[in-house]
Each structure stands twice: as structure tokens, then as C-alpha cells.
Image 1 (cartoon, helix red, strand yellow):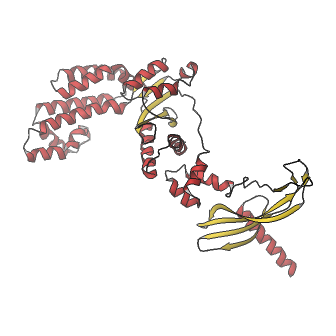
Image 2: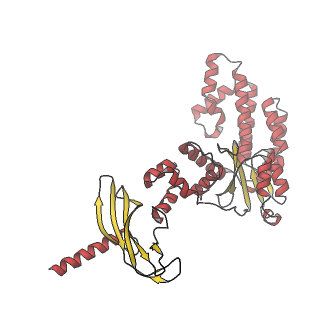
Amino acid sequence: MTNTKEIYSQVQSNFITQLLNLEGVKVTKIWHGDSFVKIYITTDPREHTCPACGAKTSRVHDYREQTIKDLPFQFKQTYLVLRKRRYVCSCGKRFYESYDFLPRYHRMTNRLAFFVCQELTKLTSLTSVARTANVSVSTVIRIFNHVNYDVPTLPKVLCIDEFKGNAETGKYQCILVDGEKNNVLDIIRDRCQSDLVSYFKQYSRKERNRVKFFVCDMWQPYVDLAKVFFPKATIIIDKYHFIRHVTWAIENVRKRIQKTMPASLRKYYKRSRKLILTRYHKLKDENKEAVDLMLLYNDDLRIAHRLKEWFYEICQSDKYSYQCTELAKWIENAESSGIPEFKKCAATYRRWYKEIKNAFKYGYTNGPTEGFNNKIKVLKRISFGLKNFYRFRNRILHCTS
């Protein structure tokens, strides 16, 4: 009967040890508190190498208990109470035994540090991660400071855009995205010309020549940068950034006309502005009638709406030759329309005509880049800002990798 109890106790202890999943560790006792669990563990004695003389020794000098933080268990803070041995060598050197799960001088397990790094891949604050892992915020920062991302290789399709950051390096930071694989490559400290030049200077000419397409918005320094550092790349203006010029134009026409309207009519046009911006064929019948009545009020608004519908049709076509022909006609019509807002828009399109045609031809956009910018906004908001640029950069790459 006694042997049966001993075997059962040993099997039960083995199961508990397997549940803990630490190699070479035996569980001797478990104590449950209201908000924490203490697990008392020990290891079998083994031969160690003396760090002073290199001789082998298995002679134990004394023991001491060390409390170590581990992964949360059953929604409770978990502490491992390790009974550590101190060995003594024939040369007189005393030293503690080493463990695979616990680095020297550390008070937390390797897997807890890995858990913190894993939690930081989520869009969550450092304080929230610290609370979950039962460590301080400074400990989370110290662990994350070991995470680093090297400078990436340049892809075939390089997308660049800026986002408003609050890092110490400047008001705006730049994001680089692989336009084919749709993943974040790197974050540049500022969008000013000097920072962009110093960043891309670190790449050789051969590596820069691998970039075949350079996707950006209508900010001139980006285009100047592409012409200098990526002479073999085709420059593409992102669709969203040139389409919105037509949206701005028709909105400005509506606002100009509204100023001449009676108060009640002005409020109606303002409330109904989305009907004017929406594609006409997507509207319901009653909304189409409402738009028709609104356009009867002013010739400029009616012409502006026709130009808007025409331009959207050009952008949504999948025939490149048709898009090129119609774009040239659209620019001429906008210039001769007599509407100042659309004349300004046409001048912009004429200046960027080649890059807009490239957008029609190849189809690459900054859509994924704008998606990553939204994730960065969420990260900034939940973190209440990140002043340290390098930590900010690594956190973005960590969350989007």
C-alpha cells in the first residue's frame, strides 16, 4: 500500500513538473495566494566547471532561495522559489550553478522576457504589458531595448509616405513599405531632404538600381529624391493623392456658391454634400432627383459635377490607352471650363501628367502604406506618444512584422 502511494505521489509530481515545462526542474511545493502562486522548485545536483580554474566539481558549499518571476498562471502572478546551490572548487572558488531557463543575475525567466516581447507585437501600451506580465514599465522598456531591426534590403516596388509623429527627431516621420509584399521596411527619422539623403546614401548604387518603381504622393522632395537615388525607377503618384484634388475642387465650388445662397438653402446644400461627391450611378432614384435639382441652381456646380463624374470614370477604367486619351481631354476641358477651382486642378494634373499615367499603367498604390499609418496612429494614441525615435521605430516594425 505504501509503495502504491509513493508511486502515485511520484507520478503526480511528474505531471506537475511537466505542466511547469522547465527542463531538469522538480516541483517540491505549491502555495496559492489570493492573487499569486508560489511554486517551490529544485534541481538535481550535477558536475559543474569552475569559472576560475576550469576544473570539474560537484561539491556543494551551501544553499539559498531565490524568488523568480514567471509567466502568469491561472490569471495569477506566478513566482518560482528556486533552491540554488553554491558549489566550491578545490581552488577555493565559490560559484552558483547555472540554469537554462534563468540567465545570470536575472530575476525573471527567459520565457517571461519572451512573453513581454510577444505582447509588444500587439497594439497595446507598455503599461498594459507590464501589468499583464507582473513587471514594471521600466523592465518592459529594458527588455524591448534588446529588440532591434537592421536596415532592410530595398525591394522592387518602394512606397514612401509620411505620418505625423511626436518623436524627438521632428514633426513628421517617413515610412517605407514594400509595394509587392505589403510589409513595412523601415521608418526614417524625418521627412526633410537631409535625413532622406543620409538614409539612402547608406545603400550602394547597385542595390538602389534594384528599385524599379517608386510610389509617393505629390510632395516634390520625394520626386527629387527618386530622380537622384533611383534613376532607373519609374515614379508613380499614388491614386488617392491625385484623385482627391478633384474632390477638393468640387467641394470648393460648392462652398463658393453656398455663400450666395439664402441661409435655409445653404444649410441644405451643406447637409447634402455627400450626394454631390458620390458617384451618380450609385445613388438611389430619390437621391438622383435631389442631385439633379441641386445642380440646376448653378452652372458652375453642374459643370463641376460633370467633370468629377468624368474623372472618376477615367480612374476606374482598366484600359490604359483610354485613360491616357481621356485624361488629356479632361485637362483641356477643365482648363476651358472657366471654373477657377478646376483650372487649378488641371494645372496640377498637367504638371504631374507623366506620373499619373504611370499610376494608370502599373496599378501600384500607397493603399497598404495608408493602412500602416492608421496602425501607427492607434499605437501613438494608446501609448500617449513615444518621444524616443529609435524605440518608436522598433515598436512600429515589431507591431507590423
